[in-house]
Image 1 (cartoon, rainbow, N blue to C red):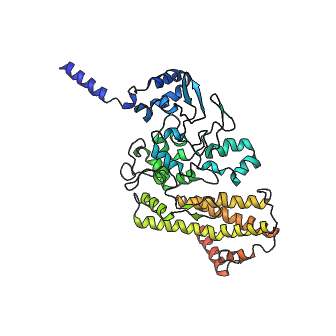
Image 2: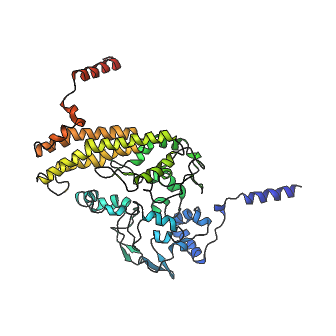
Image 3: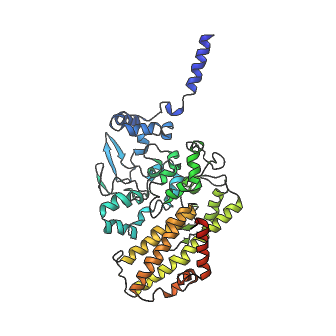
Length: 430
């Protein structure tokens, strides 16, 4: 009786061993990689052992076996090895995901080279600043020198839009990790926060401030980040992450690796504009919202959001751009960026402050809409931009300042002033 009970208990215990603890079946070449790298790069091997790839028997050689057309390969103990596992390699198994990624803004991120941002990094600040800053998020062209070696000015490079030696764009590892290949990692908000942060696009800071971010931190254990199926409203409902809104599945939509599929406006340029097929894109995002919010709530949120964009465009962005155009046309500013004070003022107003105002509203971060956003825009516009533009070309701001948006600068009425005084006295007893 005791022996049979013990044997049954042992059998149940064996069955309960999780799959990742079992020895994965790997190829002969893959086993040789593991035998060597377990000593030389043990961290890499352990990351792989805990991955979904290991559980499926996808080993080192499965990914690193060189493609014939890849120039960045070398002979390694009798095998032709690809140094970089590019999206072309991932596409051997994940064809649909790679195709979606290739048409995304992520894949084209390295095209920022030539922009004002890149000019700041490369020329105004200096090459190493761009190499270790801009290019580690955006990516750049990776140059292979042969025999497993790369140009140090281009590698290491984890930029989401890097141009690989085989001409593929981007790297799946930017989101999924290089050897853990983790969906859970890609679903975590801080994963996106590596690049989407800072004074010009503070998405992670806005998210952390928002109720969405608060809900995530309070309910992380309920998020089922490791789950194969990850449908909002079905597999989890405690909170959304960046991936929930921009990529992951709903009951009506499949997962997409094109992060722009659900974005209806671009908030990056001086003046926000609607994207092609913006109504379809907005509908896709509203579908995500509807997993947790009533239809009326979603509809009114978008009215508030679009009202904020209109305010920014009409009150500040278009007038400021018009003034800058007139100053360039009159020869009051040179065409060299950032060689004059007003160009710095204007750049920070739209590129930093204006983006924060719009993004704060888009992601429900009120402090970024107000104090980090519109307050900074207004302060810069009225106390720096307008006075400096007027100094350079007297009268250039007159039409703008006659607008109803700016008529307050002519002075408040006596009634308005008295109302403010009375409120202060009543509120603070002073």
